[in-house]
Image (tube, rainbow over all chains, first blue to last red; front, side, top):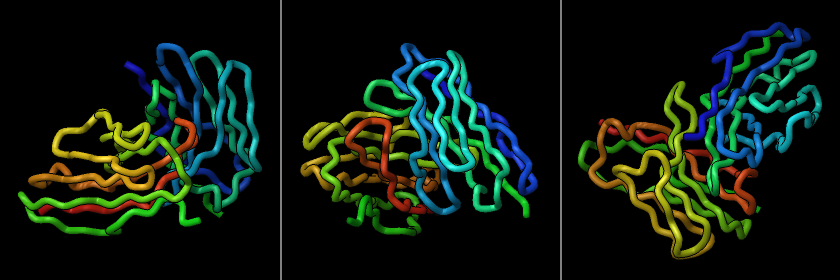
Length: 108
Length: 111
């Protein structure tokens, strides 16, 4: 059974304090790993797609990387507006399997 | 474009009542999905559809039913509501499996 585990469950940072979120997965034949952002009271919003080990994607202060067993979402010099829950998912046939997410809070 | 719309936004049901959560998308997407999200539990797939007339069960289908008669609409039916169905429900659509567009959600309470 395909599984996605995210850590930590919650992370508090000071503005400007860089850190990383982890997503580990077990899947029979990786078709892709995906990152979503979810703001409180809203639906998730697609961020990144990663397909192969060594691949990196960047968007503003976020950089996602992929290895054979896990993915990292690096947040460089975060701002309060980066506060959200970040979800990781893998594709399983015609579906996505989501992790439980990491709730990021960035204090000014 | 409105994207994915869901109605209602909030609903309180009594145990044993039934209701339909509506989902409509205007992006001509073939794939549509229903998820529920409980605090600290992530997104759980209830049902999904790969095109009009085709539906399949997800991880947690018990107590729910769906239909897909058109490309645009994918209603979720709750029969005999139970407290365990208290949750936030999200509908999503996509042209590719992974880049899903989510609606704003329906917050359902069963008491």
